[in-house]
Length: 137
Image (cartoon, rainbow, N blue to C red; front, side, top):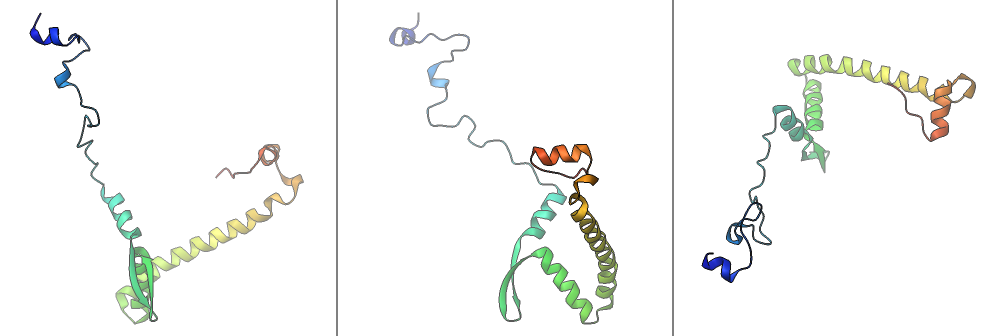
């Protein structure tokens, strides 16, 4: 036996590393941790346009997202007569208006859908009785 084992009753072996190589109490075994994942372009773009900026709007300070600022700026430039901004605004605005009208029509048709229980299917009645109706779309 070595001198170290005579002073210490700890036996070194399989699953029992020497005490001087074990993790110390209160000290992480992996201080740097796992490296952060590099964000992809889409995630970085979304994070950036959701961030807030401060603007002066009619003499008042307001905090809006960068996305809202871009829309406001595009609209303002289109109003001042910037032809390229006007073309871009019209190209984006028309489909947006159509989607909004379609969504509003869909919501108005869905509102009255559940007013008359005679028009509901058995599955819809069971889901309502169970505590909530979620549309299957």
